[in-house]
Image 1 (tube, rainbow, N blue to C red):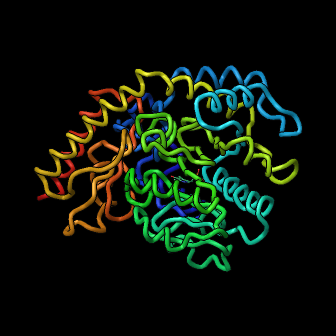
Image 2 (cartoon, rainbow, N blue to C red):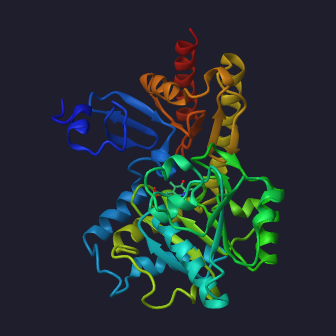
Image 3 (cartoon, rainbow, N blue to C red):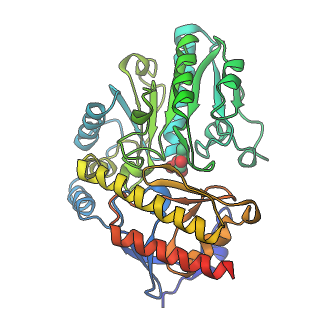
Length: 401
Ligand SMILES: *Cc1c(COP(=O)(O)O)cnc(C)c1O
């Protein structure tokens, strides 16, 4: 028995989280073990982060090799892992330039600051408006949480940054109504993750791109959750047939090691000139070495194939459970980012279902109070996923009684 318990959390931690009573102490692949050595199937992936599961040998090797060489220099000096990772990211995407940071919020903060500065520099101070969508999530810094479209996250933190407007997601007419030449950026997730696992329709995605072009506004894609193979392509926008001007990524990029990146074109990047933005840790050798190993694995065709196969398995499994137990309806999502919306009678109780599932040995997530969310490792095996669904079924059986 370990000396720290869940009670320790309440004694020493700021109460902004309410973690589960389970305290995992080790993991391997898509399995976790807690302090009592109980085993769990991980269908949450640390909130869409651990794309290769826990303790993947390639990541452990990259981390330990770099750990004995060099951990940190600052951006006063550059380093090989950062430059190699940037070369890889620019080779694999539309982007020509990369800015590294440590989280999704920081990647978005950089993107929004770049969009503002691009507007100021190229068009003048009036071109500063940012349009975003209700139910969007872009991080928790004051700027990113203000661009996010969930009022509950900004309550009590005002005054908030100005020049930001929200319109309903997948509603092109609403966007068109607020677009003008003062808009410097439209910010969207190709699939809203935290907001309920809601994919953009292809028509909406294309329409947003057209409106941005018409008003000379930048299109910013927040792929912090959808990126790095999660949806079955390296980035989700590839499936929508839309190329953004700025793309942000984090979560899966480091597979569990904190790292984020903002990708853009050389032309747009030029406005974030020397001295205009920065980060002490951004692009540090340890993070970039690990992210390089992750990128090697997730750009392998076998891994992206597995995402499609496990996605079909997860969808079919959830459809069967939806039919049998009637707590949720047919799942929605892309690749291995899937949501199951609760039926009216169960609305508000997503967390109860997750707690019941954990008691049966499977870890999953909510996306708001009304949607169950699944974001397993991209290399999860067929047997592990089947076992996870079986444990979920046991939980639904209990709850249904
Ligand atoms: C998680 C998330 C963020 C914030 O990332 P952090 O690393 O927690 O700062 C931003 N945007 C999206 C779409 C996310 O899912």
